[in-house]
Length: 246
Image 1 (tube, rainbow, N blue to C red):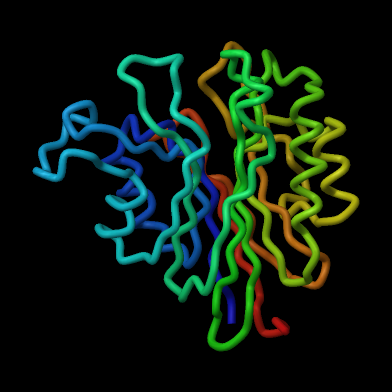
Image 2 (image 1 turned 45 degrees about the vertical axis):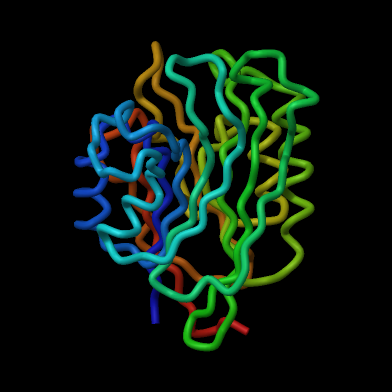
């Protein structure tokens, strides 16, 4: 049996309808989403009568997923302000989840690089077997230059990887040959055997900064990057063979 895994930075839902169409077409089993915001409905140009809307809730309700969403911080660099975080969505039961701060407000200096960053770790029940799934969004630095804060975030991230049958995915804001990615690849396997094609395209230059990693006990196949302009990042997809899950 294979599971389809999808990771995507959805650009704060700037083109939410297009995002939902891509996700509907791909019909992945587990989604790791970054830049998932919650804000007043009028700021999202939506009229629900609820008053406050969460993009993870909208996507989950439209496409039939269970979901967990955690806030990283309330941004004060944009107007209007909004809460921003990450989300995990699953067609299978999410047994438990937790939010881990990789860097917090104590390091925040009102810059993208120092914004608080989190990881979500969840245990998902796949027909009685446990799959550990982590999604994250690491700090951004100009042209993805070396970042001490991002290296700190990776160190804390690697402390979460204690079990087999683990998937780690997200926007790492780190180039393939960066110290951050190389550290992760000591512990996990990059599901893209040739991570060269850019995954982030709304910059002066295109960068490969999004990845899906798996623990060494998991078999995977059919990695691909989806050509979509619904975000400033491309969705990543891979299939995981779960027959050998513990």
